[in-house]
Image 1 (cartoon, rainbow, N blue to C red):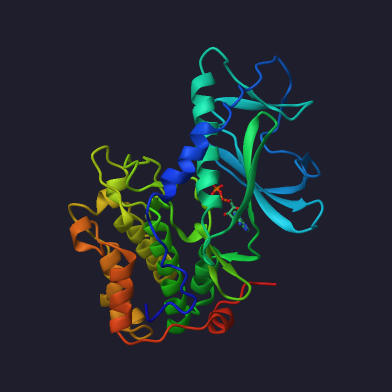
Image 2 (tube, rainbow, N blue to C red):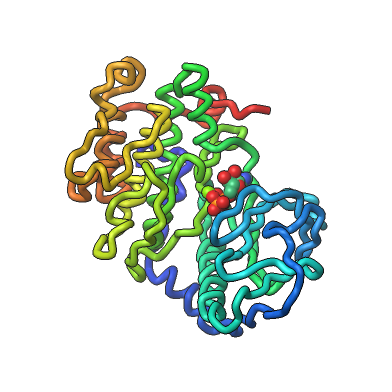
Length: 350
Ligand SMILES: Nc1ncnc2c1ncn2[C@@H]1O[C@H](COP(=O)(O)OP(=O)(O)O)[C@@H](O)[C@H]1O
Ligand SMILES: [Mg+2]
């Protein structure tokens, strides 16, 4: 791959996920959540809480299935990010012990165990990934009657924040910086897909840009094996999720992550989302990037056309895999930006 300066993509695909999942099947069964009458604490662990050798600094985000924390590792004094399994429709936090308890032990137990098992499965799969543009998973553990995994802390800004800054300041991302991000993120997806994994939730908020200008993919909560488990996720990030990921009879694959990546670059260039995919399938009102004169002044048409192609509503009109998209970029004979050039063009705020 001509445009993969830090290429770490070529990896054998054979039975990667199988090996990991075999280990999970042999793991000890997960114990049940405590079902005790008690006072309810806020969903997030408090600052200063001690967790398995880490100290919680503050929550970074909370969704329906979990909480993300900034934390510090006691011995190394390094910052990490910790993700906690917390399916909030099924459980609450006990005030005195901070343990996670089932709302209704008669009904929710099975789903709660499934959620926690699935979370640990995800952690084990991610811990085995090793790519410069995918946040590293250091470890995972059980505590407080729930499960956690610990990831590399990325010091920087999300691509969403940067895109909003570009739009606010009227200062667009340079072509070199854009190309540098595209090539590196495609390399990361090529690697993931070669392991038969799909990210399934690529969007500007899930791409962090380090202070040295490199992109890192985060938030693999929806990541699944692409060939072992083809079930759609039904969780939509509007303007980024492709249609086949939302339909019961859909067929998600590498092309689905590429749609979301294309939609992410669309947002980066236009400062707004593509219309939700269900509005695009029969009558697509989205203006192609390659026919926007303001963008054509700034970027090579081949780059704009490649993004348009990646996020076509119909699967058969898109790139089938990351290598095909990279090949199109290679053919356009444009050199990618170095990390330093990206850093200069898209400097995260101090
Ligand atoms: N590895 C990381 N390094 C730095 N910040 C992170 C990291 N992972 C997540 N964050 C921050 O925490 C926020 C929420 O985390 P995320 O994993 O995306 O969970 P969710 O979107 O499901 O709440 C992100 O938008 C980002 O700002
Ligand atoms: Mg996220």
